[in-house]
Image (cartoon, rainbow, N blue to C red; front, side):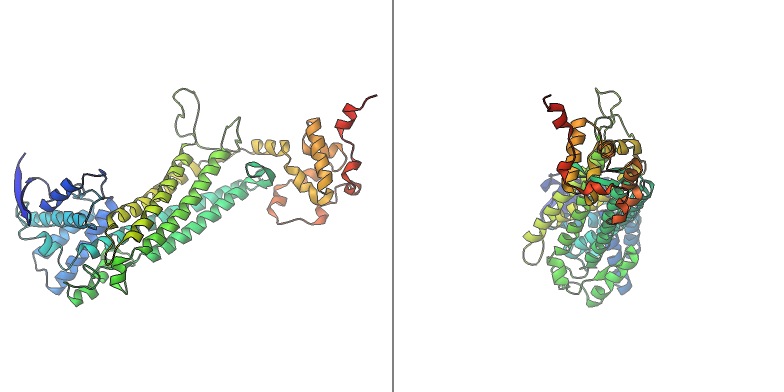
Length: 492
């Protein structure tokens, strides 16, 4: 393997000839062989865009002359388009608050720009990683700014995915509007409702999450670019500090703005704690919805089986024909991972010390990973699960008819004690509540069907006129109703 020799303040090192990174990156690779993880492409693109905004600002000011400016901006554009990502190799878990990643990009962009100008890799002439690529910058303003740029872009994608999920939920709400089913509390039969009502509730929860994600973007759009090391702008011209965020907005197409207090924006990371709280709320809703759908589809023959999920893959290596609810289970795992990451981000923000948060790399990785996971989970949940989910109306009605759900509907007209007597009689005789009510002469089949109609489920509360079909005499005490137990056990 051919090599080249590069040097830094610690001495000379051999670098593989074909790579675009250099000696600073090599030392980071040796010092941080930790997770084996890589920075996501969204973050690399964002960091390249930050570097381009800085280069354009320096070029406009005349601090970065041609041809260096043109080559560096061209190299940044290549990285934004997806090139050179394989040369961003430093482990995200690193000391130095992101310095190693910043230097990794500086070296890659400097080598590529120099190559464009006809110089060999590793010469850093005419474009130097520090003198040109990192001009008027510090890791401490570049790195968190790139994090916010990547976060804003991913949050926009997450918001769009949530919009589609909400629409799918609303479509199911309409499609299932007349599917009568048993509502459940504490996993026990409760009162009748419609399947559409359940999906309407899911749609409302997702709508709130869309609003939260919008607010989440508002929380992180202020950046500290231009603040350099601690937010004072030391080492950068005032005109550059005032201009560079405007260039970043044009480069990214995002509504970024310069933080009013650059010192605060450099040392305090509570905006990410707040944003992770909103992401955790979304994760909690996804966990609830995924678990509900998994439970509603259980069986399908020996469980609830009220909905049918699209069959995606074989569910067992031994049980032929078994299909598992793999998408709800995968979404649940994503939700749990995001909740755990929220705690990590909170700890990282709280453990920052004095004028810089040294745990920024871990915070950045967990935040971006959470948004990416949620975006992907929401997309696949909507496309492969919700879109093809079907109701099983016959099964839903079968469970309604075999449950005691009708009893609660009758309480306003018959009273609690009489309904208890109806339930005891139904249990003793082995007949449904509806049939028992008819057998006892308390209501006819038409009245019972009207009381259980989806139309009635959708209205709030009841009016006494709805119970006109019930026998007025049925309002007497519960002990006026003969129960079969007494007849069966009486001695002649």
